[in-house]
Image (cartoon, rainbow, N blue to C red; front, side):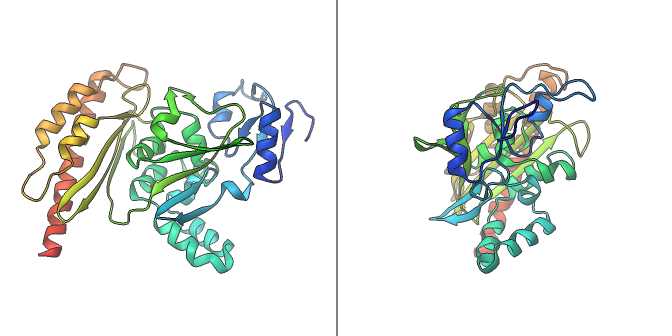
Length: 316
């Protein structure tokens, strides 16, 4: 512990970090890219942090990546650059794993395309070196670049405290804009994603420019297609509501398609139109957001149909 303008903690292990959280309401800080913006002060002044800070980015328990029992487990403090597929980051991670390098390479290759694309869209390269996955989720912005992808992947958030461990779907962990159900004594320690190498994915973010831009609308979509039939399908829209918006009725209209039943794109788009209710704000208008979301839905469904046709051709 170091006494300064802001009291800080530097635990040596996850167990020590959880013990500190059980006794002190210390703010976890990993990359800090969201926290330093949230609590920023005027130029040249220290940020107005609400209390003590606990650094967690160095803890090895939060920087793991592995496949366990058919599930991809991503540590809370994995940097966005790694998730985005940065070759240098991947090489360094594999070398660091030593004799377990082949397992690290396998886990890195299993990062879903939709999450890689979303992480790649986050900020600038320097920011992706600092920003971590748990920070993007804990910030709970409906426009968070990786958040919609995690919704589409039906990700579970792993929360730990000295009392034990619990898992929640990310859609239940985030309760509102900037709000989560994280308890004062808990830490986000990992994310669990079903490891499905044959998963179809779609990701698109619309902002004021192609890079380093805040999201006006985003769509993440995933599907599992087996034996020519859609077994599962998700649509997750960012920046069109207080949280990422899922459209279960539209998803159900796609599930089961194939094997003689085509995807009715206009009907699915109409269901999305009825569900989404975006607002006007400083970034965009409700009318623009809804129309773009519908356009992205059409693009995603057309992409899925093309994917299914290619798969049928491969097996013919």
